[in-house]
Image 1 (cartoon, one colour):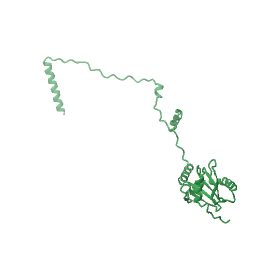
Image 2 (cartoon, one colour):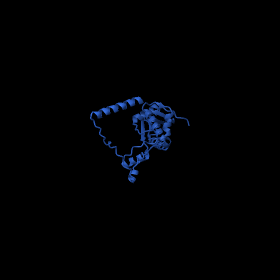
Image 3 (cartoon, rainbow, N blue to C red):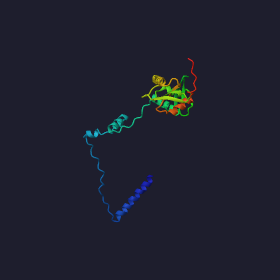
Image 4 (spheres, helix red, strand yellow):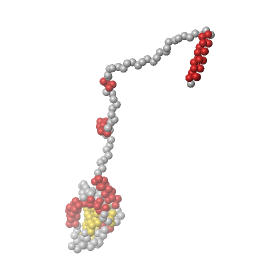
Length: 226
């Protein structure tokens, strides 16, 4: 490596000598200017500059406050209410099965029936749904009679209490209306009576109620011995 550099230096020297011998002239010029040095750092402190720092990210509370201020409050998810969810489930079960509670006298028989299909409904979850939560009720009461010609007829009323009630709380209402209806019927022609309680807002016409009473055997009862 050193030998090569020496040869290059000798070559440059010889060419320089040849250039000067041929009348060449070498001028010595000034060095090119260097890049200017940066100015000295100022000792002055600007309070405005010092305080301009990156703001912190908004928290959830900050965002909520801003939405309220802007009038853009997003709808909140309703809190999880187990009781309300159970009630909705029970009412859906009763609505799907078209449940009606039927009581007939003088046998004293009481049970549940699908008021559309007229099929009996066994107790269980449906019974718990009827008794376990309050409902809006429709109560249809009838006195079943046979006239002197042997023709059937009924004297009926429909009651729809305001508000929602547990089934146990309907006893006084039903008893009052039931007794009043039976007392107003022709005692010599009345052969049976009964009521239909439906845990929803629905109105029964006379023909529909008659089919329900017929399905549960209201016209062919045997009085239970006391």
